[in-house]
Image (tube, rainbow over all chains, first blue to last red):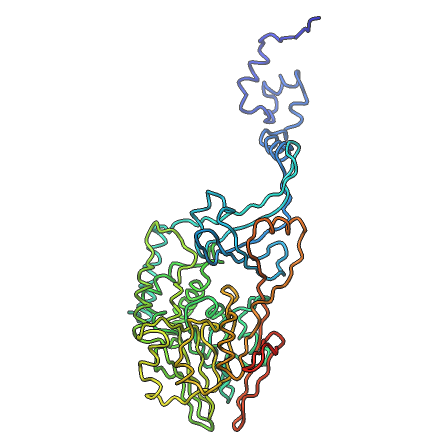
Amino acid sequence: MSTAVAIPTQDSTYELLDQDRLNDFRYPEPNSARATMNSKINSALIEKPFLQRSANAYLSQGLDLNEPREEIKQQWSGVVTSIDINNLTVQLQDLTNPQNPNEIIVLSRDEIDNKDQSLIQVGAQFYWSIGYRQGIKYSKQRFSNIRFRRLPKWSAGEIKAAEILTGEYADFFLAD
Amino acid sequence: MLCLGYRRWFIIDSCLCPETKKPIALSYLQGLGVDVSRDVIGILITHWHSDHIAGAYELLKACLKAKLHCSSALMSREAISIASLYKKDIFSNTDIEIREFSQIIKFLFETQDRDRLVLVKNRHAFFDYRQDVSTRLVALSPSDVATTQAIAKLATLKIKEGDQRVRNIVPENENLNAVVLHFTFGNLSVVLGADLEETGNPQTGWSAIFNSNIISELSLPVASLFKVSHHGSQTGHHDKIWQELLTEKPLSITTPYSRSHLPKTENIIRLKALSSYFLVTRDSKVSKKIKRDPMVERELKAIVKEKRTLNDKMGHIQIRIPLDGEFDISVNEHVIRYSGKNSIEN
């Protein structure tokens, strides 16, 4: 058994569309050559101008069911209060139930992502979430994600502005 | 807070209520019906740590007649240059003590009110009233050496272009620059120990007070009430505090520092033995069970090595000094009372 495939010939209609490729979904100018041609080919194309590519891309990203979904059960913000070779002591503030009192816990450094190890220092801040992760191609699993905040370096502009301000303050307060 | 009679109040340090995030001193005084804009004569920041300065800017704005007292190291060019870097930005929940100080100097600068600022070092007299009841408040610290060391330390923290932002810039040894106070009201005296610690250096910490001859120079009477320094820690202890500054078995009070679990059991045993009564504004060891999703509890159990809940209740101790009697003490339900004889009486 064979399958017949109809291949259209290269006629003037397709040449016109190719020239206008960047504006595939633009509503054609009235009485333009393209509008006339399109009306003969497929009137639906010019009657639905809102079908834009960006919208299609957005929808496809948001509805990708192949990616695992995260169901967060608990979130904290934390600050490192002390460290030693193996452990870090942190103070946690409950973001899921803000009325809960703060907690002090001791964690092993191994619990921190390798990318964040260099950020472990007293006073460092982080966010911690615990929950489930699952999807069509993924089995349900618990996750615990600790991410340290990254602060930008001081810029030349900030230093210069502070120096000017320091001078003004020091003169005013007669600081040595 | 000290109430000096004649509707005069003096606020020592500031911290925020965990629930309202407002300065506790302000809420308390306003609750009593005190006109803070008129009746607060002074605010002292004993040292530059967040549990002593948080909310001081709001206090300063509300207490229009109050002078702001702080260690001279805090108003050095080195300290100002650090504070000048910090302004309102997306990291505003970091470096609370620096941002608070930054707001204070900005406010004083914008209001052009330099006279509200008073720099303090040892021997400084905050007031010395000789009306009906002799009322005097003097500073026993910081020493000149402690102030110089604090400024030198701040100078090493000068920030340059390209430096990484760090979160806790104020050094822990800022405690050596803390202002210890001696308060006299009639026949009774009080020592307020702030967070001053002892390092063994004769020119800083508690040793500097006893080596400076300040007690006899200022004719300081022994005190029968002691606000124990540095949350009752061992580093806040000096034998001579109990021998030269205090009566035998004074009434001692302190505030806990939950992060460091202060006062520790051994501290409590020591302070109980030295005092007639030892009061702590709340029990830092209370561990409240928090209800969570069982899955979260299982995960925490697998990850966490140690866990405890902080007791964030605000204790309150009120001590009245009648002209001819002993202390009249009232406390709220969060205060823990240890007696020199028994264990916890609560």
